[in-house]
Image 1 (cartoon, rainbow, N blue to C red):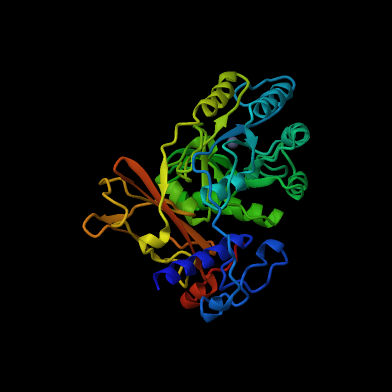
Image 2: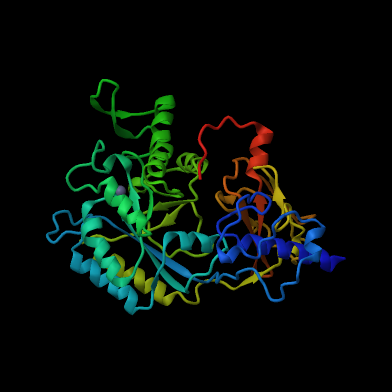
Length: 434
Ligand SMILES: [Zn+2]
């Protein structure tokens, strides 16, 4: 009996990992033509149908290398004659850096691959780099992209929407919507960098446009600030998604100025990851709401050199992690289960893991990052009541703790039947985000 119970979540988990992108088993109406989803059961219900399914012998969940590390680089303008060494770099220096990554065996991966790895869905090479460009400049399209193509590298563009040509701040050096669409069509990731590129913290001076069209410098508070922040985080995302027909899940914070409130609004807006400018190698457990990037500028050549050195020497840096099967933790929701609420109670029982060091219990939830859990040392139960609606069709939970000096970790994925959840709540939400 126990064995059957253990196998069922495994089969269900499989269905999830085989699905192309977060499609809940119960909810997938259209059958994908992709060959990778061929094993998805048609009905999707974990009923008796599964018992009769042909046994698939050696299928396992993808095991991700949790010791892999990634450097995220951030570039601005590429110009032959550097006039602003605080943001610009010459094309030759940029190309030399891209070559150095290759020579050092650092694999350039896409941002979405990095995030999939963080969710435990996809493996990445041991030493990686993600290249990003901020602010949407013409030179990124005309100069940087051809260099990236030479190396076969993909990258991410962080765009502030009022800086695109035709916007409030979109001057002569700005990229156009057409150029962005061209990049999108060629697989380049386009993500958000606010609407007007200003300090997002309440009470800090920003330039806004009054209803009469005049620009004024002001410290916004209260509802005026709320409105401003909504536009910077939500308005920017919606505009990018609508203009380009894409899904935006990353936000690069202008100047790196933010706080807990900004993070919360960003999470509510549906951003999966937020990026700052404090560069550091990204590890499996780096919090998703403050991923540090190395800003590369002409006047600080050491930043790049130090970054590649850092990842070069940090092979043994990550502590060994013992993986615990989620089935042993009686998780709730169970691995592979589909729940009908976007606000589930998440629970796991750590009593079988061994002596847990107090204060070491941590839970990460995809889309939310680290969440404040309650842990009862007597029962070994760790729990978290989700308070912000989960937006994806699937949710990955990672619970970690220290036991006898060793880090132990378990992850599992459950589905969310959003349509059922929405119907139950009769949600008045006017726009459907995809
Ligand atoms: Zn910027």
